[in-house]
Image (cartoon, rainbow, N blue to C red; front, side, top):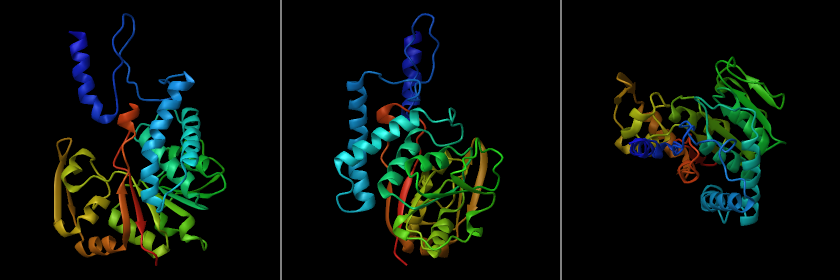
Length: 292
């Protein structure tokens, strides 16, 4: 009976990249979702997992960055570095923040792009801001949030701002060597136009469900990038239920269309939470804007 219930629970949790440990006498059911606590210590098995992750990253990075992308050796090195850094991270709980999936892609993209300027809008507890400094130790990293009260252990390697990113004037920078991560639940069309006006080209957005899946995210930045890409299908209003509560947004179609025209390339990043069984993944999406 217990095995049957466990199997049912795992079928429900599998889409979230989670699994309950198989029952053994005296062992409680615990989610298996963090490489700091649950992994194969054997070097050969660990190498197999890292090779699988590198295999997922290679075509994605070639698509994002153009051309052939980083070499296989370079990608293998990036994935190995991420594994060690993420396992030893100081942020042990990611409640409400980015887990393995988001962390993997942010680190991998940043390390491959090698930006000199990194901006994060919506830092929450500061985990991904810190992770970006680990990916690019020489970069100028800025973290923006309306409140920094939740940030744990403010790293001196980061310039912190307790206001919206749109209020800050950046010094002159190379658009090809700059990266912005938006995890602030603000209108994605607005953020695209703000970034374009400032000369940024490489953007990453979290919480990017299409319109018909908004119910699963509560209050993402509406319209999302997915909705911007489908601008021809846009409605003036959109509504859904989140945990039984009605949510409604007005859509600015002109803003939506201008944001769509600013996009040169867009790609939802492949899932690495499900294949690795480490949870915490989302609709993380890369956007490259047209040159000014």
